[in-house]
Image (cartoon, rainbow, N blue to C red; front, side):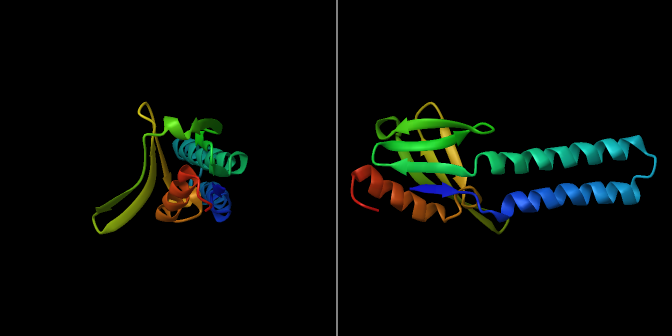
Length: 137
């Protein structure tokens, strides 16, 4: 099984980069500071979208373990014996609720949001528990 980012995310990030450039053309004039800020923002959004295009699958799992994206686009394979805990971390802050899938290996924690997974973290945690126990998902 594998979970990937929603396809709309890299498109939205690239549209944001284009919007920043358009706003810079419209409002920056000859101010080099505004152009520099716009350039940095557009490049950052483009790199963020590039990561989504290079490594769209954030989590893959089978009966032997999981593969997660670590860093920009590097993948790390973890056997089930390396994973201490799989849980969904729920938090509410200022009226906003967030859920994140947490894979704890003891020396590293991998956090994956619903946007990273393209599914609800609770559903992914259930599927991972089924895979870990060896029953079909």
